[in-house]
Length: 529
Image 1 (cartoon, rainbow, N blue to C red):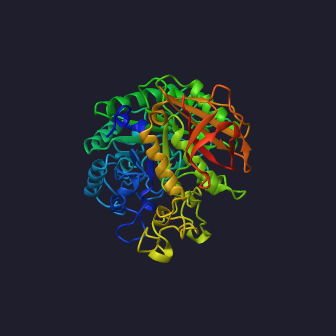
Image 2: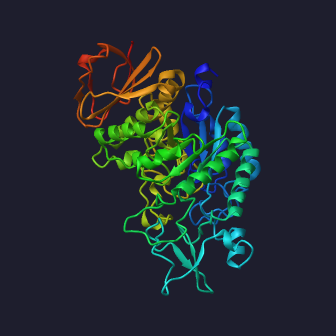
Image 3: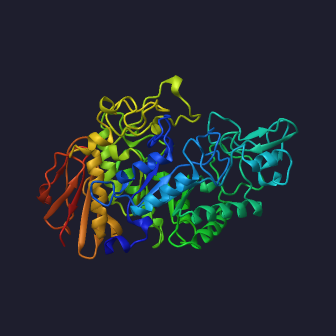
């Protein structure tokens, strides 16, 4: 490994690739992805050559034993593997095989709630010793204790009444996902033990599900219309609990915590990473929800930088298992595929860690899910469609994902939007993603260099990456038509095109004063000092 790769902590160096295990690869033909399917395709992620995605880490969404009411985010046992995904021995083999390829392993940690079938909640419901591990309260005026609603709109109130008795229990999501009471020290101690269990098995990091919910308003006050928790009055307790989680993982070398901090306020998001003793990274949902506008992205990126401390490190993503894919979300006018390619350039070249959701390297759109195939209560099936590995005309209707019937329909475009076909096409999104990953690995300026915005056109997002005598200028055209660039006077008159999201762009030396970007093009230029 080069000095460039060792100069930064692993979680800053390259992309972290999210795997949704149900939809990545199915090794046993039952139509549902599994851990052995992941093992079989690790070389796609990083085989040590530019023919792979060169990822630094993979992040596995939940694989724990679960009734699957919320597809694994309702955990019934935090220390095992659900049989649909394999065994604990399969997980151990996955870690060994990933590490053999210099791929770190990050797993989902779900500390806010358990399944209602977890032994802890079964005991609590029976008024056992763990009753106070959950949030049980008396009702109010014949109804729930307050006006809190589930984050899943279809569920309604965030409280369910016990079948026998007058008390209600809190669930931020489904009734099958009762919230734990982190105000009970025994709950926190149990969660710390779980982190230690997985660290001992070689896990390198944890993505903390709904990290912003690790404390509840102790007074259970009604929420104002539109108010999203947590209220800033009791947010400090969340920070303290995250600091204690950080102390647990810091006892093991080279471990990392990234939090799902679903707050739409950059000022509050950065507080989770600014001090250096809480999260290493925080997912930025303000960035995720931006409209397709150069001005909006510029303001958000610069705003995050202005609010961040010197040690804070951004985490950039625009898709995951809960949100529409880029090609669909920004594709209403027919330009989704080109924008998905441009977004790959942006994620890999911004200062920070790119999080790439499986299939983004193919510029996949969401799948069309007919009503009779809908399985998710919150409408997230389209972005969870299985990954096509081969063309259906070659591999059958499972497209290399499975030899059986896929648990969800694949995208209609699987014939050409699949790994094998794109791997043979030099102009494909996959080949672009691979080049971006290895360019970042090889160039210190793109990996760790400082960043500053550049004004070149109102429709073009532009930024410089600078490391000693190495400089790169990245340009991203948000317009669907070509835009001619006006370069700042402090930049040299010529540059070198390293790569472009537009397959028609010629690489090599170029005059910057005559540069025009094609519609939806993103371009990486090397600028000599």
